Image 1 (cartoon, rainbow, N blue to C red):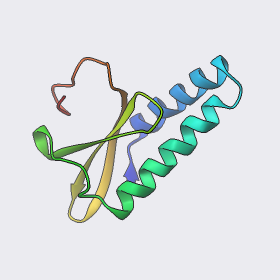
Image 2: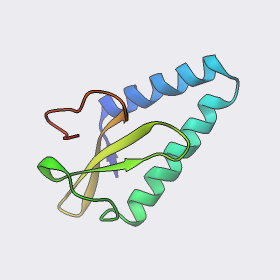
Image 3: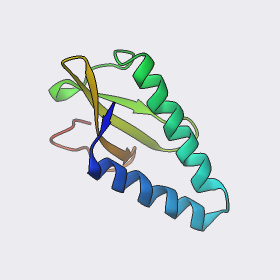
Length: 93
């Protein structure tokens, strides 16, 4: 699995935001994100295709989704975005 730098910046900022709201919540977010990454790695085709061949995996307990694509058998994570954000023209709804 390859995670783009922008996705790392996004989820790091989210974790910091959660941690500032409640001690330990940022760590819980990162743990859930890690669980999601592990699930995607084991079952990359487990989520429905969206526009542009992107797939969206929703985190449990947090309103965020992982936007990824499978290319030549490898998983590329493009974004970690809030589920209520305006849909991306590039990555689909």
